[in-house]
Image 1: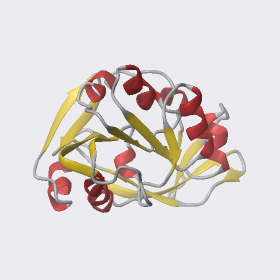
Image 2: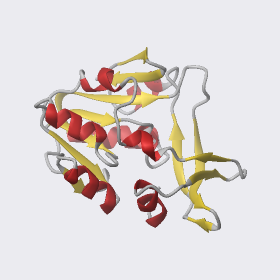
Image 3: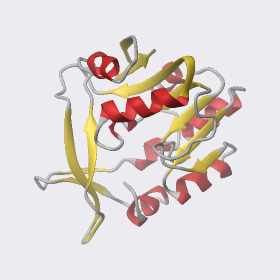
Length: 203
């Protein structure tokens, strides 16, 4: 989702996520701005300080700040960072695989809204996130329902004739998250359903 098409989508322009087989789904960016069902289950499990990875326009980063939880959003898109700051949250233009402030000291890392798919390699992503956490730190993530097949897709953004570059995006099922978490060096993972979403806590 990197690039001008993503930035435009955050500004309200229509966009689709296109798969290599030609299928498309609408990119529902409006859901990233306002609280959605299940957010409370994520937020209530966050401790200070929390790192919101792929924070987008900052829905969760801002909500945590308002609760008195020290939080930082990181995103690879300048518009997303600007929107978070405008809404009252702290955010930096940063890739999770680059240098991140507070490395080794975060109490919680958020991978909300499917962001466990970042990079198309969930085990590699979780290994990196584990490096960012302090002792006893946790990851709170959205995962796909248990009946979903875990997979890696090649996708790109499209708006009419305009297309972005292809990139890898992973889907991890609630049935598979414990296996992936253990392979990445975590000791345990729990899953639960909340308001139509499946969430996981990795320790």
